[in-house]
Image (cartoon, helix red, strand yellow):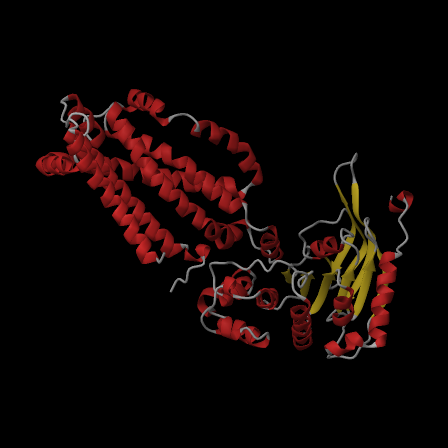
Amino acid sequence: MIGKEFVKFEGVGVTYGARADKTQALCPTDLSIAQGDFVALVGPSGCGKSTILKLVSELLKPSEGHIFFGGRELGAKPVRVGMAFQSASLLQWMTVRDNVMLPLKIVPPFKAEFRAKRHGEFKDRVDALLEQVGLIDFADKSPWQLSGGMMQRANLCRALVHDPDLLLLDEPFGALDQFTREELWQTLQDLWMSRKSTVLLVTHDLREAAYLANRVCVMSARPGRILEDREVAFQRPRKIDITFEQSFIQLVQDLRQMIVHAPAVAKADAA
Amino acid sequence: MSPRQQKLASAALIVGVFVFWELFCLAAGISELILPRPSRIIEAFLQFAPAIAPHAWQTLYTTLVGFFFGVLIGLSLGVLIGSSKLAYDTCYPLLVGISSIPKVAVVPIFVLWFGAGTVPAILTAMIICIFPIVVNVSTGIATVEPELEDVMRSLKASKLEILWNVGLPRSLPYFFAALKVAITLSFVGSVIAETVASNKGVGNMMLIASSQFNVPLVFSGLMVLAVMGISLYAIFAFLERRMTGWATRKNIA
């Protein structure tokens, strides 16, 4: 299932601001993500987790280092990414189906055929996704008629509809209650297992990271750097029950210890 | 109170005001030269209707033409300013400056440039309604959620695609809210210009009627303006409900 190296960071660092009040957001970091892998980034807030997502999605340029994508430097060839954030930010004037369809209107090669296929092939494609996440009965509803959990399901569908090479999730379930969140973990696991996409998930929920990911990268407080890169070997598909098993609880505790007791970074180290 | 009762109450209040006005004038014996009774105003309107009509058309014409160009300019400026933080910050002080000039004061300048008549009325109606549209449209576009913009940018959407798919539809409720304000302001603009420098239009007609102490005719001019203003407002309020029902979470079938 997990293939060759897909995303590679080589000494990638990010510094904000001009000389005088320079802030280092991300220490030079090496990171490698394999094709089809599910990697979670955890760490205290402001540790540069989201910065890494923004780097991969080309929303932000690295101050130093290089990012490779399938062996070629980022920017050489357009990378197709799907993104979802904590706020579902669905467009209120469109139905759920049209919201999910939006990327097909913008991303090539779908873009060129959008007018011809929006009521045919593309609609079927969207409906199949909505079916998979259990939203098909709400396809013609407006976003504000959905619950928070349903909005996030639609948000996930919008991030996946154009078959992205890489799915980037920035605390997508952060605003949901515990039950809804666990339901969505299962939905996301199903989507990932059926589509074999490469996923990079940023979260501050350690249970979420341990439950969903194949690899958990623990980051330190600002300036961010990766402290630990931990394999998570639980069998797939994982059931919510595993979160009560001793080995799972132990893993979450280990991760927590690492974050809480992360050594403070000396100034000299950062520079 | 049910919506039906509410509407009934509103209508009763309007009728009540006119009945009170009529009775008060009768009871207090107020001279027609000061405040004519509603029945006298309607009588004057019917009597002078053929004479009022061309003036009413003129006012409606200048207002709508001015409004049309005002919306065109306001919308383009709003989109331009709203799409760029730099343009927004740069242009805002100038716009506020221009908007704070009382529009009556520019009529003499327009008259100087274009002569008395239709053109100054159109221009006044136009500039008076530009500002609310610019402010509303640019705000609507500039306040797109950052997450949504990130999602669009991560899909490699161009600025134009973001504007077309997100910015413009999002600013529609703001735009229609501005249109309702702008159409009423346009009337203010054209009537002011007609009053100051024109030989046509309801404003001019009212000025002449008052100089002849034909007070009922002055008030029928006012009535004509009110009816036109309310009708146009209603049209845009209706369009707003149809086009942007999603903003007020009404079901649009």
